[in-house]
Image 1 (cartoon, rainbow, N blue to C red):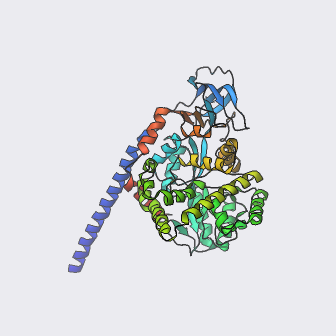
Image 2: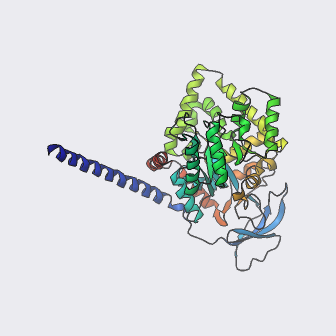
Image 3: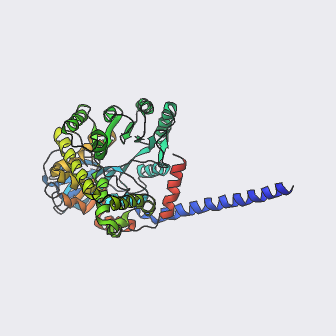
Amino acid sequence: MVVKKWLRRIGTVMGGLILLVAIAIVLILWLDSRHTSYLRIRDTNNSFVLTNVNIVPMTADTVLYGQRILVKNGEIMEIAPTIDGGPYKRIDGKGRFVTPGLADMHVHIWDDYELGLYLSKGVTTVRNMWGMPFHLRMKERISNNDIYAPLFFTASPKLTGPDDGGIDKKQVKDAQDARSLVVRYKEQGYDYIKTYAGLPQAIFDAIKDEATAQHITLASHPSFEVPYDYHFSKPIKSLEHTEDIVQQVLDFKQDSILLQSTIDAYVLNKMAHTPTLTVFHKIVEIIKKDSLLLKQHGIGYMNPAFLEFGAKDDYNRWTSTKLYEPEVGNRIKKQHQHHLQIVKQMNDAGVTLIAGTDSGISYAIPGFGIHEELGFYIDAGLSNYEALRTATVNPSKVYKELAETGTLENGKLANMILVKDNPLENLETLETPEAVFIKGHPLDTKTLTQFQTKAFRRGNYWSTLVRLGEGLLFQ
């Protein structure tokens, strides 16, 4: 009887603690949603005539001067020098330049603040590359036009092999497990299946077969358990990370023959490539700047929980490495230069490059990263037009779900950036948009500045941990 009495008391205490934790979690998430209420769409009018603008349509390396754009319900209906527009409101472009919104095709999003941050820097499409349940809820709110946000597509949790450990990965036991996970993630609403570095061929084959049957594509971080050219097959449409070409294909060597054969395989198999040069270059910055990096203004735009549990690991790794390998900085710089050479060679060969930054991890800053990435393509030797294609036209050619984006033409979504100068002559002008239009909703400079201000040094540490915990438990 005494034992039963104590068991009941323990059960009551445990139940009370669980209830308190549940209440705390609900309160934390509710407060976080209140703090990001500035993103809610209150004015649903997305029809207008944009007058007095010069259009960079990205259908060709050209500018259409002195144009108007008629937008109805978020869709471009007409582009012409003179448009009446009837009852629709007029927005004066003041002789500025209009380009398609930018796409960052490799990001890691941790909260709503980052959605506004991306918009503030002209990014109107993102592909999230590590999916969790909260991303599905985020996707639903965006699809329902509840909040201002870029077009949002998300990969599933990261599928890797049974011997590739790590709390951020979903280890797949065997082929049967692989097939069931693909079905489950498709039913849950993920847009892509994310495959990771530790997948052995038998499991990878099962993932590809089931994904094909389910009509869902793969977003692939190359697996080191199979040859690199194994990835040149359906339903994979793009391969991530130029650094993995250097590491896996070239074994860190300058092998021009092997590199050319790999690039030829990209072209032959119509495989796109996402370089993610920005996140790799953060290693250079960590080594060079050390503790000064942590004091830079831009770090304030990073999610505080990820700074503590993710970026800090990168910082500790590379600052400690240079203590026993003094030349590591030069080694990493040389590899970055090698990446630039590869990107240039791929572009010249006709490989479809799609811009992606890996922003949200390490010290790659959401929204800001895309402009670093495009700058690296310029460093590599691409023209402004070629670089801009990687973040506009090219993604729309690779992924059918982006077919209504990437250019300014009749029938396309009115995802646009208004900037001061011609980006074909001055690409840096894209860093400071004077207005951004997302599905036809105009966001002026004041609103874009607010989106940045709200995201700076945000206090959502605990709400992020709650969402991450859910993701790790239910991946």
